[in-house]
Structure formats: structure tokens, C-alpha cells
Length: 371
Image 1 (cartoon, rainbow, N blue to C red):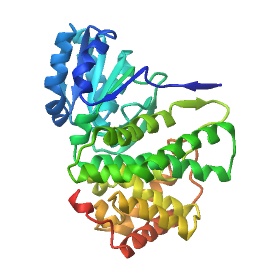
Image 2: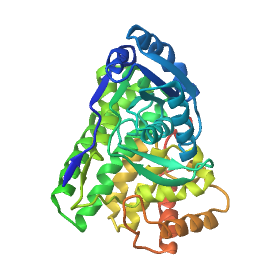
Image 3: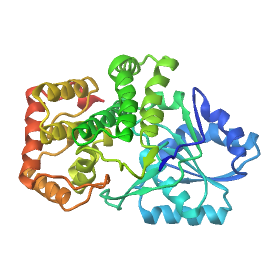
Image 4: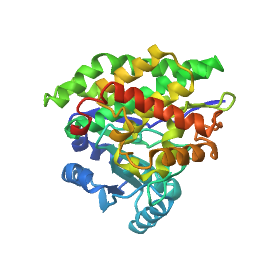
């Protein structure tokens, strides 16, 4: 059986937060709003005004930690005490994931207001759960996605350019990880999702690069920014919306590498997509991709100003020991995509060092430290 788990509404436009109250009023009359300090600074006034004008009562909570089960249960308790009929998450992936988890525990609808386009967390019917130290614990899958996504392109476009670049790298992973599975299967579900990934790639490797560079230069063209934002959030989120029980989803190496390597705290300063970009090069090596394919990956991630070396990711000390530790963790864990990685600890370490060498040969990623 195939099911599609996606939001009911996706509101993407300049000033979307100012219009959100009327739509939220049709979902609940009391809402509990959770977001990081930065997210609240850029959304709170407009959201509060919109909610008041629509007769929706609300309460705010600032949360800047990782999405943990304990934090999600605490938010659930606070929301229930307030008598909320829905939860609103505002911010980046961490805030949105913890609020989705809290909604799951409370059995309340969730509304998301992404303030960056660094991931598809605003859309995706899942949360990536961590412990308090920022180490991956598990994916939490849901039967429902957020009921409403409010993607205010004015707000998202004003975020540091690093986030939208990182989000583009993560979005492109859908193509690279799914394409690698064609070697093992040509099933209907795989080919369907691969076509979705092709559209993401077409947009981001085409005009998307130009539009991101526009934003980096301080030129905001709403229609251009919206196309990249929608690719990072809507298209990438919809990629994970279809589920098929006869043909389970199988990803590539990059996301399992990211998840298990969160035990290396040196990497925590790098964004999700920044790490995914580097691990996609590692994945290409592990998969035996051609030199031309590896060069293509290095080229696109260089154009997106993503880290291409271990030092750019923050890993500079006891490199061999830490890589072996991460590789061991990967081999000891069933990945989030339900399959074991068929390789060895030494092969993983060697592939990472080879990806680092290729990145260093290119001189790293231009301006990566400045973004």
C-alpha cells in the first residue's frame, strides 16, 4: 500500500506570517508557540498581531536546545496546561523537530514556521531526535505531517546565506542518495521518487545557484528567493512524503554517516547540509562512483560554498582515532533507512580521508569560513 503523508496547507509568500492567523484560527483557538530566541525575534511581533486579529489565544516558549524526547514531553505538558488546541514551531530544524515530537506525544496538530531553508523539517512527517549532547538517537516517524507550513519568504531570505546554501546541499542529497539505489532496484516507488529528486536537482543546479548568489550579494528578488526556498522545503519535504509498504525506502550512505558521526562533537559547529555535502563525496567513494561523478559533486558543493575538507567541518585533532570511532558506530547501527552498510571500518575511514584529500586538492571550498 502507498500512502502520502504531507501538510494540508503550504503558505509560501512574502509576509506569510502576517497572514497566518486567519488560517491558524481554523485549526485551533488556543496555540502554544515554541521557537528559538532568534526565531522569536524575527517572527513574534507579526505572529502575535496576526493571532490577536484572528481571535486566537497564544503563549510563547523559548527553546534553543536539541530535539530530545525529554524536551518534547516537557513542551507537551506545558501546552496541555495552557489548554492548547495546536502547537506552533518557529525556527530551524531543531525547533521544528522538537515541536513535531511534542505534537505527536500530545496528539495535537502542529503548525510550522521555518525561519531558514536549511532543511525540509518544516514539512517532513518525522523528527530527528538527539540527546542533550547533540548526538543522534533515532528518527521519530509520524502518520501525520504538520497541518500547516507558513514559509514567509521575506524572513527566510534574510537569514544568513549559509543556511539556504546548506539547505540546497541537503536537498540535492535526495538525488545522489536515491540514484545510487538504481543499481539494486528499478521499482515503481524508487523511480517515482527519483523523478522528484530530478526536479530538485534541475532547479538547484540551474537557476538556483544564480538566485542564491543574488541573495548572498544582498539582492532580494522575491520570486527568485521563493523558488529556492520551495525547492529546499516543499519539494524536498514531499520527497519523503510517499510511503510504500511493498517497496521500503532505502537511502544512501550520506545520511547514516551524518547521524552516527554526531558522536564527534567537533562536527557540531557545521550545519546538517554542510556535513551532508561532504559525506555525499564520501558516499560516492564508498559506492565506487567514477572520478567524473566525484568531480561533479565536488564542483556543485564548491559552488554552494559547502565544506570540502575535514578541517572546514571542524575536525582537526586526533583525526584517525575519531574517524575510526565514527566508522565503528556506523557499523554497529542499523541506519535510519533500515539497512546495514555493507563495508568495513577501515574502508569508511579511508573513504573519508580520500574525500578530504580531494577537497584539499581543490583548495577547500571558497569563502566557506565567511558564510
